[in-house]
Length: 491
Image (spheres, rainbow, N blue to C red):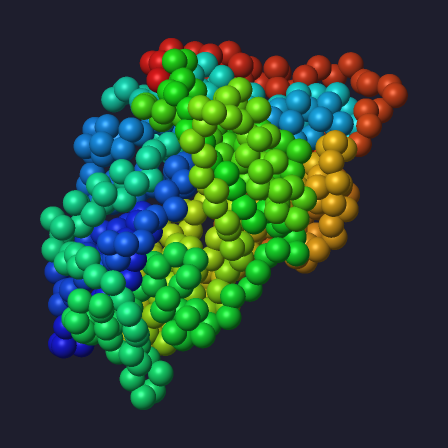
């Protein structure tokens, strides 16, 4: 790194901005790096991304923040799985689970793959994802994923949390790392003659200069899209949902350790259990249903009276920017792109984007030498997450609305997704195909098996079934997992 100090200016707070501030300040705390976060006191945060993948667990471990310190402050609960209800009723599968994959599943992933292949051959074997992955058992029995000291396997899990409280917690922690916080209203952005961003001019009369700027200003993307004119690539051709309505209800007495995603007439509803309330929302397409009807459908689904409901409506801009790092500006969170919250990937993409950036920036001697490589890696990750989400809609078997039929009949898919589905339906090796494509994504072979098996994406059973027994029972997984459950207490 050059001898001159590096001044990093983050525009926008919220979970994305404060997560970035913490990661940068922690990793470069012994270098000549200063981090300043500027946020407007007049702009609120969207505040509905309240679920995570296990990547967030690693974030807190890397930051040396104990669960006991942050979870109570954010009304957080554990999350080991996502339950999908009503997405593929015509296949005979009413619901399925996508559990997070843990070290313990080393013993059961292969039997799951074998049974899925056997079922693709027309034979009647167990292919229920939650039966093969230990977090599926924890979810079924509502057990906490915390392990005793003598438990020999690492259990992966995520969290449910209040996103507003999490942002506030991360803000407080960032202050301990030396991050400067400025509550200012940005009125204009000035650039150098070469096009790089030079400074922020505020309503309060302050000029804030920086060497590296990070855009966390939300969908408006003040720096990357508005100032640097980086184009936005929409995913609307294969992801129809562009709006949501949210409504909180009382906390659940018998609190699950999983998120629930229920298919409705024109999208799906989430249920996120916190310690003090339950977060609910309906993600839908405004091309197929009005705002008023979407709200009414959500309240009916929740059993809430219209007069008692406090709802909030949101619009979503689904897609990603053509360059996540342009000139001396990096975009994170909603400024870089958004893929609907079906698999809770928003914070995962923020965290990995920051981590990959720091790796490339350091590798280039704190320069933009590897900017093109970074953009290729991060852009590819967004596209592969998009593909996994698209598959949820493409494979649906609902016939109750034009929305679901349009999703099923939509042929706008990436070549990567087409090849994955082709291998599956030709009874090929899905894991081998993922390796062949060199897919570097959060969703690996086991996640794809969960989705495809969970949707019942199989041919009809053969008329005659050999008496070969159930491979799942033959492997004694039920007995093994049941024994492991004795080590885990209730949520």
